[in-house]
Image (cartoon, rainbow, N blue to C red; front, top):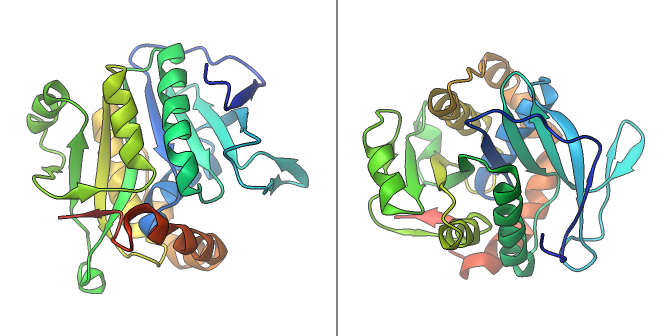
Length: 250
């Protein structure tokens, strides 16, 4: 395990095959962060680990029910058999590759079948679109062939992906770990729960565990208001990833 990060586990998940790891890190529209926080808030997954790093995490603690905890934590759902890595704070750009290496190491330890990253793709006409489109980006030709056969999202044919999910694709490919990004059209700097709902629908279809996103859509405005501070923090990190370009773009 990468010594840049330390993991404190309260229990060891009793995993079944296949196991999927869902990664939610703040970036464009907070699409991944909202998706994984929804899984946490609705009790689909429960906390089992905290991730610490003196070198690679900001000097911030997330306060949960009066208790200060690491802003980077691990969750598991016995019924869903999903492992979730969720970041409660933006990740600095110089921490992206070490974190990607940690995720690859931990996915190997848990013998997960695939790592599923959730991210947003900012588009200028997002306000005009009721239900945003979703695309996939795979880290291998074999996984791309598998995803091509599934009628749940489109292939992201040509373009770029930057931000925290790009090095995860790179590091998992090096370790021969299946990893794909679910990329949903989104706002850049406005929290986008509707895009997160689209991503969770796709996760449901791929993993076989149904996540009801009706409450996520009902609570969209409340979510936007509650996490506007995290969006502001994330906006400060976005330009450092790709010289001002959006996280993912065609």
